[in-house]
Image (cartoon, rainbow, N blue to C red; front, side):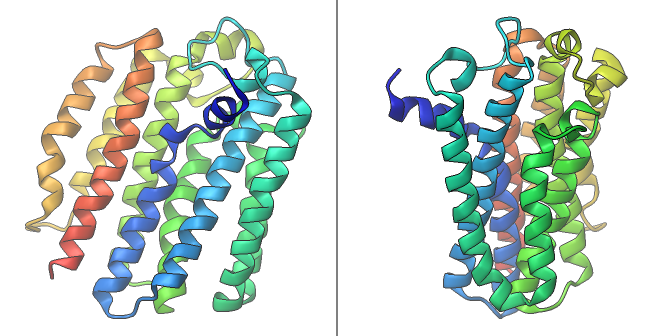
Length: 284
């Protein structure tokens, strides 16, 4: 494992659809509404991806320091745990990714005003508070709620508002749909790591609900976004129904290390949903 490969692993590219999907959907909705700037869209996407990479690096670093990542966990190997990157190197990567987010976010503040300075500050604090601090959000059953808020409501509504300076009802609906799907990604991760998290003293929603309860919630998080489509809507999203049903079926048949594949496929489904929903608005 060379340094380039180690950094790629620490960035966790399989999770990046969670940052890409809400921005893709919101910007497509803005373009369909008649007001759109490509340069602004690219800055929004850059900021979202930088924050996603930052939270991934922070999770790698802080979970290692707190003893959560060890040889028992079933997820992909982590850079710090495996010794591929030192804590100092990961700290540098975290600072760099946060600086990139702050620089791109600063331009967004100029476009959207002081409320986006507060949203940017909340995002940076969220990156750090997710895995670090005296009460890490991910260790107190708040991982799914956090991604729902940041990758759903904040990502979709905030990035749409930057383009259009308005928030119609359909944008809020899209934000809820994206939030539910990104929460499903987090839930699979926590379901897979139930035993190792328990041994490390990390409390997650999957531990509270148990295996069967977590699978029921996962099915709801995958199917609800389709059920939330306006009644009678002829949507491209219905093309994703077979994939949604397949994911729900597989969650009942997979456990342990096999959930790594479920996690990656859930992230891709999130992106597929966003693409198909974007087509609905662009085709109007």
